[in-house]
Image (tube, rainbow, N blue to C red; front, side, top):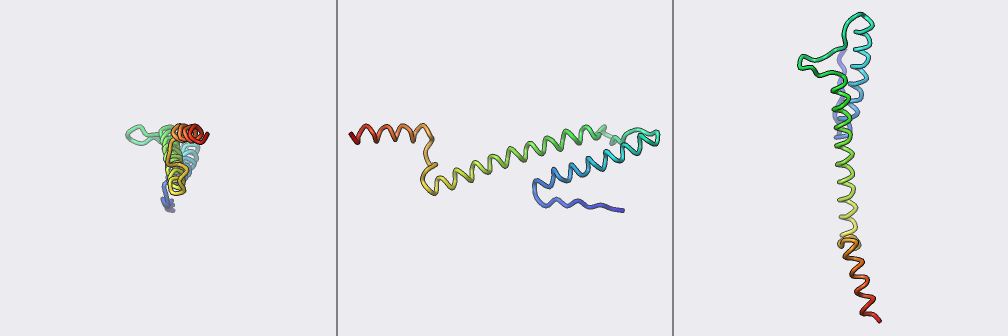
Length: 102
């Protein structure tokens, strides 16, 4: 029986990796229970490597999503006029207006 796990978006890479880890964990349990060894690919890639790689991809995706959200938030603020200055520059500008208004 063939299983197909489609990659629909960037986050589905992690979901697919997690599903594959689960499957490989089951395969390894069956192999060890039958007196064999856990499955390791010819180049030495194992379940431990897959676990590390899936975690690294998840971290990279979260980091990118955070950056994308920050850019989107700043973009919205720029269009409305409130995020076009740094907080320090805005504070200096505010002090400057107070000095001239008295």
